[in-house]
Length: 302
Ligand SMILES: C[S@@+](CC[C@H](N)C(=O)[O-])C[C@H]1O[C@@H](n2cnc3c(N)ncnc32)[C@H](O)[C@@H]1O
Image 1 (cartoon, rainbow, N blue to C red):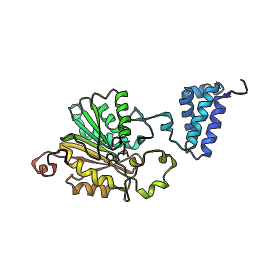
Image 2 (cartoon, rainbow, N blue to C red; image 1 turned 45 degrees about the vertical axis):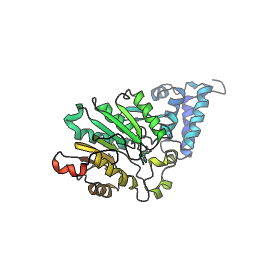
Image 3 (cartoon, rainbow, N blue to C red; image 1 turned 180 degrees about the vertical axis):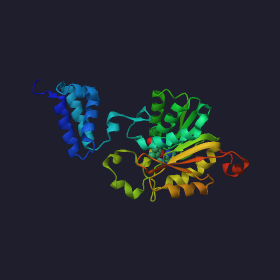
């Protein structure tokens, strides 16, 4: 080995120490994932041959990636991807990085659909970001078509890339809108993971969140601004027999459910995440004439 080379094990120790000093919680795992990304060495390769030398080029790439991570750039942004619902979802600084907790929403929507999963369902995703919720649902609903709405054109570009990469672009469309979809009609499935962090709490969050788009996080003074605007639209767009779900912050179940009841949605079911925290509200709109009043015509102005 020449003086410019370094063994995998030593490079990992070096990067781990650097990331730990920068306050990264899972420094060792992050170091290993950065090495996998920059040098093309799987975690198994790294374990099997810790003494193998890194090329100068791989070492340089690793140092660059480690410097970014030490600035607390999220790992997913450095590697450009995050797994969600076992799907590889491309990410950029223009979109929220999909969170594992959001899989709870997908899981509960699918459970409520039951035997209707093979039907030609219409799916609407408000605040689609990377498109992860819509694409996860379409991956499980073979005859469904869906549309993802977002205020951010650059987020929609990422969502479109994801739909194409996952070969779901023949069933997924995307549209810009302020919690609003110009296309008329009602939907069988509506999901939303709106921004719900209280504005005053944002500065105290982990440094990684500073690298994600503020409009994906900031829910206003009480964290509920987006629900106030979104839930009336959701109520109008949810068809008879439809299933809807929104992600919520851990202390938002009661106020968000009240906002929904105020706009004619039925009492929701509260679902918890694996940590036991309230994570989403689910509504199933029954069929029947008594619901016509709240449904309106689902047109573009609603
Ligand atoms: C918490 S992120 C969720 C992204 C994605 N659905 C997910 O679960 O990872 C919220 C998304 O809502 C979008 N958004 C914020 N304000 C909006 C508005 N007024 N109308 C539509 N989308 C909005 C943001 O751009 C962001 O992509």
